[in-house]
Amino acid sequence: MELADKAVGLLLTVVSLSLFSYYTFWIIILPFVEDDNFIHMYFLPREYAIIIPLFAGVTLLSFLSVFIGCVMLKSKKKVA
Image (cartoon, rainbow, N blue to C red; front, side, top):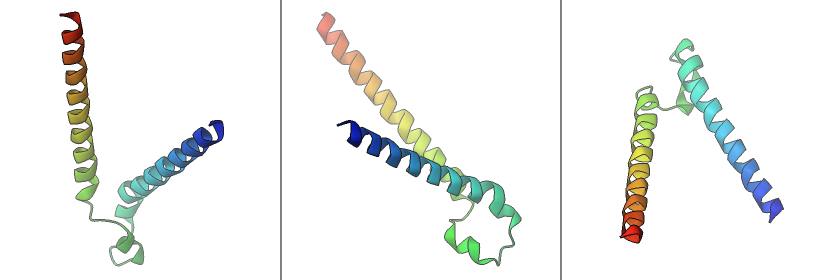
């Protein structure tokens, strides 16, 4: 079990660092690269740099609100 936990932790770390590196390069470095450079074909248009994190944040807050609401309703039923 301990080896599986370490493997999952390593996988999550690698995925997180990869996404962070990709996003950082996309937002900070890519605007300074000429538009006709081949590297631009590996990245989405810049509008998505705002849309994707915004959508992810709204989705996360929605799920978190629903979870907290369900927990509050269940705890209210146990007290009554």
